[in-house]
Image 1 (cartoon, one colour):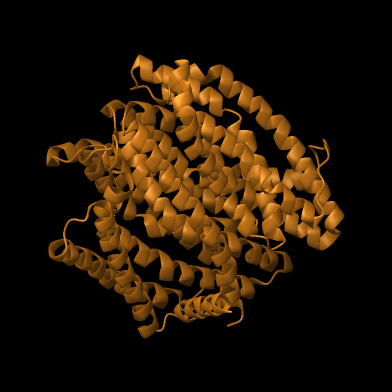
Image 2 (cartoon, rainbow, N blue to C red; image 1 turned 135 degrees about the vertical axis):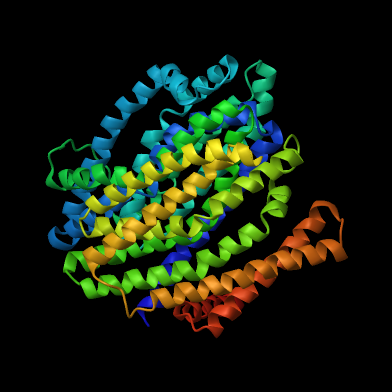
Length: 533
C-alpha cells in the first residue's frame, strides 16, 4: 500500500499545477473568443500554432521526455551525477543547433507550408496565417529546451514547477491579447497578431521559470558539442520511433485542420475549443499519472524489476480509471452549459456553443483511451521498446483516415455537419492506439492479471454512468426550479451539479472497493489536515 499513495502524491503535485495551467488555458481561449469570436482570426491563429504545437506535444508530453528520462536516469544511477549533467548539456547544445535550423526553415517556407496545410483558406486568411507562423517559428526551440529541463527535474522528484511552466504560456497569451490588441490597432497592425506574439513570449518563459530549480540542483549550462555521445545516440534512437509512436493525435489534427479549412469560418475553432476541454482531464489525470509513473517504471526497468514495473503500471491504470471515466461522464452530461459559461461572450454566439458542444461529445468518446495512452507509451520507452508504439500509431493513423472518409461523407446524408466526422474519427483512432498498446504491454511486460485493473475499470464504468445521470439530472432540475441569474446563476447550477457528481463518484468508488479510491481519500484527508494546522 505504501507505493500507491506515493504515486498519487506525485501525480497530485503534477495535477495541481496542470489544473492551474489548463484552467488558464480555458481563460486564454475565453479571452480569444471574446475578442475575436470563432472564425477568421482564430482559425488563422490555430492553423499557424498547430505546427509548433505539434512539436510542443511531442516534446513536452511525449517523445523527448520519454526517451530522455530513462536514459538520464540510467546514466545518473550507473555513472554518477556529473555524467548525467554532461549528457544534459550535450542535449541542450544539440537541440539549440538543430532546432535553430528548423526554425529558419519554417520562417522561410511558411507561405508554401500554409498553402498546403490550410488549402481552403481565403487569400487574406492565408496571409494572416503565414505572418503568425513566422512569429511562432522559434517556439519549437523554446519548448524543446523546456522539455529537457522538465525531464531533469522530474528525475529528481521535482514535478510541480515543470508542470506549472505551461501556465506561464497561457498568462503570456492572455496578456498578449488584452495588452497588445489595442496597441496594434492604434498602430494600424492586424490585432490578431497579438495572439502569436503572446504565445511566442509564453513559450520562451516556459523554460525560463525552470532555470532557478535547475540551478538549485547544481546544474550549470555550458556549450558542449558532442553529437556522437552514446547517451545522445540512445536518446535519438528511442526518440525517432517514439516520435512516430506519439504522433497519431497530432497527425490527426493536421488532417483535421486541412479538411476543416474547407468548411468556412468556424470549424477549426470549434474543434480546437472542444479538444481544449477534453485536454483538461487528459492533462490532470492521464499526463500527470503518466509522468509520475514514468520515473518509477524507468527505475524498475533499469534494475530489471519486472514485478515492480507491473505493480506500478497497474496502480497507474487503476488511478486513471478512477479519475478519467467519471470526468468523461460529467463532461458529456454538462457539455453545453460548460461551453456556454466559458465561451459564449462577446463575438462567440450560441450557434458556436452548440457546434463546439457537439464536437466535444464526439471527442469525449475517446477520452479514456487518450488518458491511458499517456501511461502506456512511456512504459514502452522505459522498457526500451519502440516497435509496438510505432505499430499502434501507424494503425491509428490508418484507422483515422478510413474513418474520416466514412464519416465526412456519411454524416451529411444524415443531416449532420460533416466537421463532426473529424472529431468522431479521432476517437476511433484513440481506441485503435489504446487496443494495440494494451496487447503489446501484455506481451512485453507480462500479464497484470491479479492486480485488480479490470475489476476497478468496470466498477468505475458503472459509477461513471450513475455520475453522468446525476450531473445532468441535477443541472436540469436546477434550471427548471431556479432559472435565470445570468452567468452567475449558471455557474452556481454547474457548481452544484459538479459537486453532486464528485460525491457520487467518491461514494460509488468506495462502495465498490476500488483500491485507489481509499488512497485518494487518504491523500485528500492529509491535505485537509495540513490546511487546518
